[in-house]
Length: 203
Image (cartoon, rainbow, N blue to C red; front, side, top):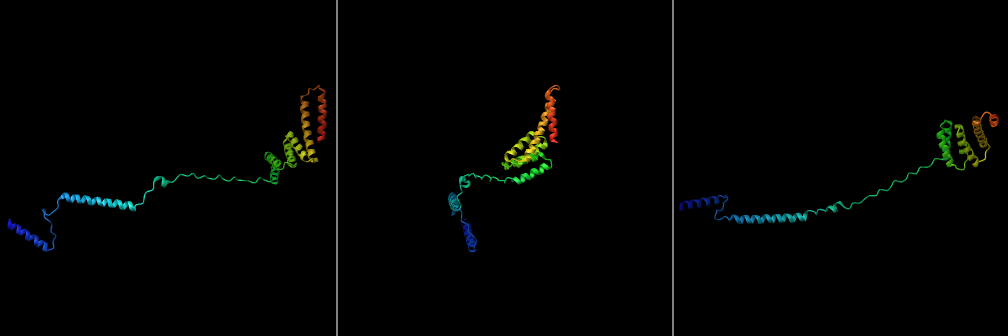
């Protein structure tokens, strides 16, 4: 046993002299419990250091309400009204004349009525409107239109057209009366005479 120990010590001295790494013996090593406690303390210290550094460097996350901000409703202004310039009386008069000459009487009537609104004191649109109604056989409307023209301007041409319309109205009324009267009624003969006189005057 003593010889074996001497050889072991001699071997250890040779390794140390050669610059090799020596390992402590089991008797010189610290207990495992002490090493475990030291390791746990070291790990705890590293974790605390990391958390303190992260808290100092990382920016604070904003709260949800701060990030979103208050909700605001944008009020959109209403569109500006589009103002269109009304047509002139000369433009409406020309369109009415074109429609009358091409036989588009319904279109011409609309333009003539618009012309009367643009020129309420003018007799011309009422006169033209009376001619349009007389051309269509709307004698009652033509008579009213001619009378409106005469209220604004007393003109012989308007009186002439009004008389012709009244004659046509009279002829129509006399013919209707002659048709309804009995043959032996004296008024039937008088109606025939008046009707003949009116037809001769209208020629």
